[in-house]
Image (cartoon, rainbow, N blue to C red; front, side, top):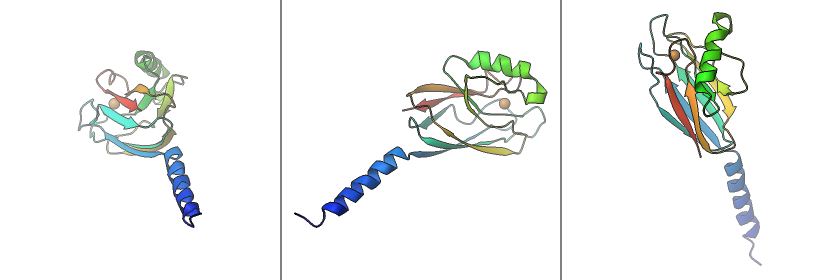
Length: 144
Ligand code: CU1
């Protein structure tokens, strides 16, 4: 029996832990004073712990942005409900269709959030719910 077996086993255990404890760091920003994100796609592994930073590169007061991850096919519904929620809720609906979201970020600001990526692979839309920004301001988180 080899003396190296415990070492090999612990190496496998470390690898297995790494696979379970998958971490992803994502960054996304708005493009100047436009209603656009600088990335139309982001990627994460299913179930990964995702840290996402939204940076607002705008300079004018109308360029407030958030980043809201929603269940596929619910973008319009979440956007409508968020507009209806109004300024006191920072234009963000309370909805079971929202999977993760940043706060509403003022021009020049940023917000960092941590969330667990969906456990089911697929294309998950993200949108900005500030009035009038969706459907221009959107993208897809590709979960693999
Ligand atoms: Cu926006």
